[in-house]
Image 1 (cartoon, rainbow, N blue to C red):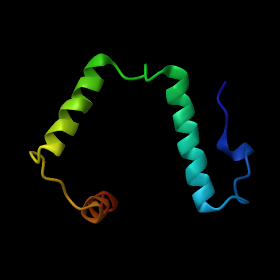
Image 2: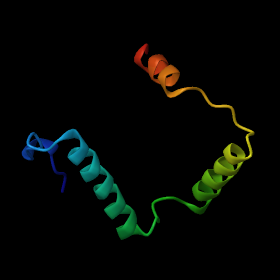
Image 3: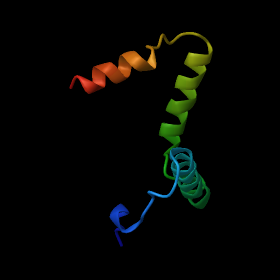
Image 4: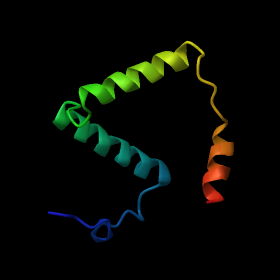
Length: 73
């Protein structure tokens, strides 16, 4: 069953409360699936990328630059 977000009124919640609600919702999905929505290969790729970032092998871009590029599309 698909639920429309339009049937809920979030206007009484602050932005911080809505962010917390989204975070809690995603945490509940993870808890219910025990992380099974990611395959072993996907988890390995995440681990590889985190290790590369921690080792300084990945050069990132500032968040503002990425957002500017996305908004220009």
